Image (cartoon, rainbow, N blue to C red; front, side):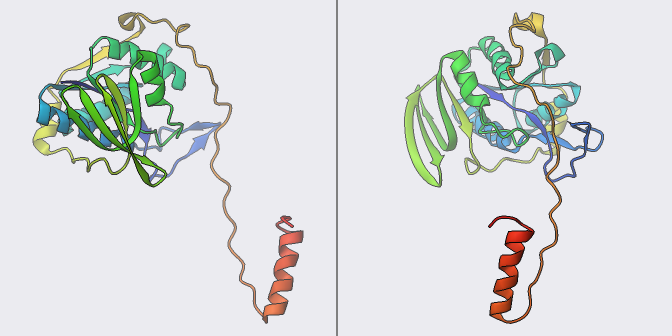
Length: 255
């Protein structure tokens, strides 16, 4: 089975994020594999180990994104593809176009991805890529079974489960609960250094900047406003109720 995992390198949301002039400062940011994509990598490795085949991991990004691919290789993926051409960087539309060009070079049976990226949270990546490739798509998978060309997916639907049956080729996006991603072992890290990593640009993919130009633009980014400390009211019930109403009307201006 030929498996492709598309992943993204995102900043670690557990770290302090600094924004300068509307841009996230990379000097202070720690970058990791998007957590949902780790589930996709783990599931791909499990499928390969059960059914045979090969796992390719791919991403779009600058040189630093290589570390995310190397982590996936250390987990057990077989080879990696990095699209590091700045003319192909953009929004979700751009990403889907570029990754579709990558996928068409590999004739993959199944494509796995995280259900969303924690930095943008749009959840558009998987569905857009499936549409570009003209294949079936199932999102938010918490269980995946492949039997020959038949695929059975249990997906999370607002806390409930929905079962979807389809066939290969298919794109599936991973939700938390699909598996427990492994930690790269020391032997895996050493092996990852020797595994093939291919770098591609616009010419390699038969694309131009005009073909994949972004449809949206980020005009500003900012951190949430700092929350003020809460206020504790004192006195009897009647006086506290009166003070609360006054504060809601005059300070919070919600009534």
